[in-house]
Image 1 (cartoon, rainbow, N blue to C red):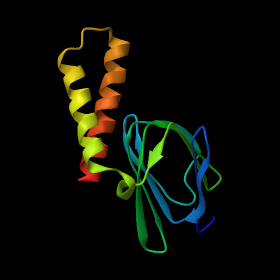
Image 2: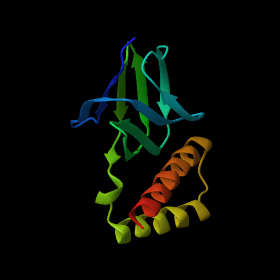
Image 3: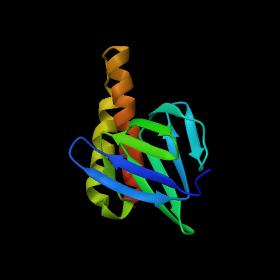
Length: 133
C-alpha cells in the first residue's frame, strides 16, 4: 500500500493541482467523504463545497463548483467546473452574487431541473460569501 495519494484537480481550462498528499476530503453529492491511501476504487459526483487535502500536516481548503471524483490505485482525480482558493475571493463580489441568487430563488417559477440548478448556484454563492468574509 502506498503512503501517499496523488491528487489532481482539473478544470475544463487547466490542471490546477498535481501533487502527493496524505488525505483528501471531498463534498460528495450524498455527503462529504474522505480518502486515504489504499482506498477502494470508486466514482462520486461532487456538489459545490469545500475540498480539503492534507500534506505534511498542513491542510489546504479549496472551494469546488461541483464535478466528479475518480479514485483508484492511490490516485484521486477531481474534475470540476471551477475551483477557487478562499483567500482569492473578493468579499463584496461574493456577497453581491449571494444577494442576486437569493432574489432569484424568491421569485423562481421554473421546473424541477431549473430549481436544482438554482439551488446549486445558491450553495456555491453561500460558500463563496462565507469564505470571502
